[in-house]
Amino acid sequence: MEDIDLNLVTALDVLLSEGSVTGAARRLGLSTSAMSRTLTRLRMSTGDPLLVRAGRKLVPTPHAAALRDRVHAIASDARAVLRPATADVDIATHASTFTVRAAASFMEMLSGPVVAALGEIAPLVRIRFVPKPDRDPQALRDGTVDLEIGKRGDDAPELHTRMLFHDWHVAVARAGHPLFASGRITPARYAACRHVIASQLGDFGGPADDSTDKSGPSHTVHVVVPGYPDAMRVAASTDLIALVPRSSLGNAFSPGLTEALGLRSFEIPARLPEILVSALWHPRMHGDPVHRRLRDAVIAVCQRAYPDGRAPRPPARRAGTRAAG
Image (tube, rainbow, N blue to C red):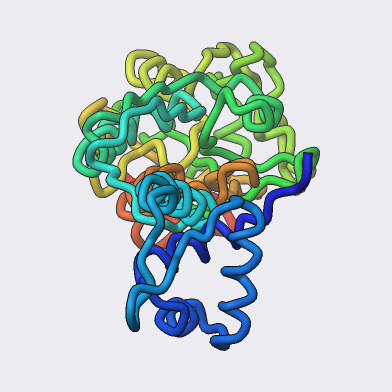
């Protein structure tokens, strides 16, 4: 079958609309002679004169008149297909499912504000939160996850990222903990306590193992729980010290969480690497207008929660640290 030149469909649509070679040429940015040659090609392709002279005007033949609506619909569809992905989308009436993968601490702190924000702009979009057991990018690659919140791994360089905020680990203990009874919290006093950490894989090796300061005494991990909220609850009702990200202590949407749980936080007397929390998505979805609106809403929530891009960090102390409250 001979290839079809879709430019001829557009040209025929304009010719039938204008009823004039000169008018059609003007609309398409062509010369009159070029438009005449296009009309000749159309006549050869269809086997019909299409437009014939009636006095000083051109009028459509019965065949052309019968084609008018179909040709216009095809031309409109072709333009819609080739329109940039930034085309208008009525997000308020769009229905789909948006899947977000994040750690339990994100669910605890920000799932409510995220649902509220997405509900305002896209009330028909269903939101699915799924746990994040690891940083395997396959779920983003195969499309089962639309957006991920967390730390970026090194094995998926193709992913798009947006930095949300810097985070780091702090320690929390119940307000009446003996550690707060006498002066500064030194590395030795801190290490002498029993500790609870969060690990979805159940590992007893925690973030403190990544400390850049190996000269201090080691501490004992006594309890491992799946998530940071669990670690904080254990610390609130025992003498264990919980190691959690600073962002878990509260934000603009839920301030004062430590006080509500009867906890006090303090800087860890050791140097741990910072945590860069980002939004991640696959390049396949980068230009999709619906995905862009939804991910921008999630990103905006995170940035409002931590407006300066990083949770306030207590000043470093050389000989130890005091509780932050």
